[in-house]
Length: 212
Ligand code: ATP
Ligand code: MG
Image (cartoon, rainbow, N blue to C red; front, top):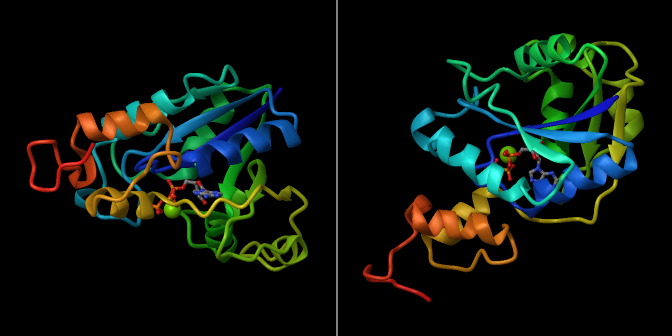
């Protein structure tokens, strides 16, 4: 069984994440894709990241309509920094018959290749990697496979072309803060959740910059 795994902060989850996961599922014949919102991204100050339960719920809402998608609490429930290598070890133990495919965007795979993630060389030996193209980053399969922190040629790394979506959570947070639209960038339920919970400085109708 081929199992897709998509880690992220999902602060908030957006259509770039969802298109990437669905495209990976179809292109690589994955049975399902497990989304893994992290508790504490290792390189970010926890004060700058939205409550993990809010990010978990937005991920749940965004994926609920796809029968092949599900959300795992494995990182949310593990105390401390969320290291992907620990998660992959745990998933491999939990699903011994599954071939794990870790799905990333171009920025994330380039970080792993440079050795910037915890135990990157070991991580790169543990499963298949599917790297999606992302505007602003150049992905070259031969370079990825040939020059990386392992010093080995990595045949388990794959590049996937996706319809380019210049959407990022950083931009969505900034749009909410400054009253610009996020409609069609995130699923409707996620937009509603952001408004309801007043995330990212969303101004309520009684606020000075109310909007419809
Ligand atoms: P932020 O701007 O806060 O870093 P983000 O949009 O990059 O947020 P993350 O939660 O950091 O989202 O990303 C989780 C995973 O999804 C990473 O592997 C990232 O590369 C990938 N990803 C995010 N947005 C896109 C996109 N538009 N196209 C392809 N991959 C994406
Ligand atoms: Mg990011």
